[in-house]
Structure formats: C-alpha cells, structure tokens
Image 1 (tube, each protein chain N blue to C red):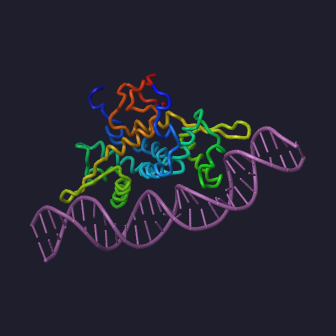
Image 2 (cartoon, rainbow over the protein chains, first blue to last red; image 1 turned 90 degrees about the vertical axis):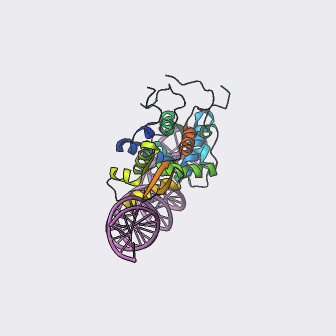
Length: 118
Length: 118
DNA sequence: CTTCAATATAGACATATGTCGAATCAAGAT
DNA sequence: ATCTTGATTCGACATATGTCTATATTGAAG
C-alpha cells in the first residue's frame, strides 16, 4: 500500500474517459457561482436541509431560475430533495462531495480511510 | 471535536458571492471531460509535468482544441506552463487542487479529526 | 535567411447554458 | 369546488462554450 499509493487517482494515473465523464458532470454543476452558493446554503442550513423558500431570497434571481439550478445539482447527484406538504426540502449528498474532494486531494490526509464511493 | 468546527467553509456557513465566483471558475474548468483528463495526464506524467506533445495524442481532437482547453485550465489557476525550446511544458498547481478539495471535504483534514472509519 | 516542427491565436459555427415570464402542478385553507 | 401559496415546467432568447480550419508565432536547425 505504501508504494505508489501517495495520491488521488487523478494524480496517480490518467483518468479514464468514462470516469472523467462522470466526474465532469458533477464539477460542471459546481461551475456556476449561483449553484455553489445554493449548495452551500443548503449544506449549512440548520438540520442539513432547507426548503426552497429558505434560500431563494438570497439571490436576485427569479424563482424558476433557482429551481433550474437546484435541478442541475440534483441531476448531478449532489443534492436530493423531498416534498413535505407545501414545501420541497433539499439536502446535500455527502458521499458525492467526499468523492470529488478525494479525487482532488494530492496528499491523502487520512491515509487509512477508505473511499466512500459506492 | 469542537462544536461548529466540523466542516469545510461550504458546509459551515453560506459561501459569499465573491468566494463562490472564484471557486466556480475553477470548478467550471474541471467541468469538461477533456479538461479533466488533460489535468490528470499532466499530473500523472513522470516528473509532474508534460509537454503538449506528450498528451495530445490521447485525444481525438485537433491540436488547437487541446491548446484551448489547456488555456482554460491555466486561466483558472489550475495549471501553469513554461516554454523550453520548441516545447511547452505544463504542470499542476497543487495548492489549487488542494483548495478545491478542502472546500468540498466535510471532515476537515487539517484538524485532528476523528476518522470516519467505516 | 529559410525552413521545419511545436504551440498558440483568430475566426466561424453549431450547440449548450443561464435567464426570464407565463403556464402548470401540488397541497392546504376557505 | 375554489382560492392561495410554493415550486416546477415550458418556451423563448441572448450569451457562452467546444470544436474546427486557417493563420500566426516561436525557436531550432540547415
């Protein structure tokens, strides 16, 4: 294990086209300032979840636009949501963030933790 | 473990618009499968750097297109390059990757964290 | 100085993306 | 049923993006 195991897959060997395709969908979803803030607002909200009404006021954007961005984040596998009565609650999928994080981390900080990726 | 000290900025509190803008440029650069593979090819190449000629054959794309993607990665602050004779060598800027990684990691690796061992 | 090989830039073009207003849907409340 | 409020979907539009070909640039070698 201690040999060439120093790095993230990205640094250890060339990424396969398939994996790059999967990852790029998630990174692309994060590649918009509104979506990054949306994700952060959801993640940092009390209880780890937030309804659209909690967060849409933080932006100077129409409500359909917010809904669109949330959909992109959801389809990328970064968020999930559930309807509860009148409101729709969103929350982060931690394993997805963790996967992206570990793909990028050069020096594996916690050498023994196994990756959470399904 | 301290109370609110558990998480990345993204999870601990809402990302500012400025911070989100900076980060989104980098994430957007990673949001393309070709660029992800380019970054990985450069990062995993012997010596941590590669010239364009080393990597462009891995793609079924024109040379200008590769050059364009490398430029996007460079302008996002993820790669740097230098001309040496006829060739131009690219390498990863590790701090940039690390920054993105830690923004996404739920368990702050620099703190004396408690592993999430399965 | 001319030529050649490796990259980069410019210009063009089709497609993707972010945004909006209008319409629709879902679930309470009257 | 009808109205109201929260959220998604639809259709349109301007802009951004990925790709190409053609052209320019840079440096090395005859």
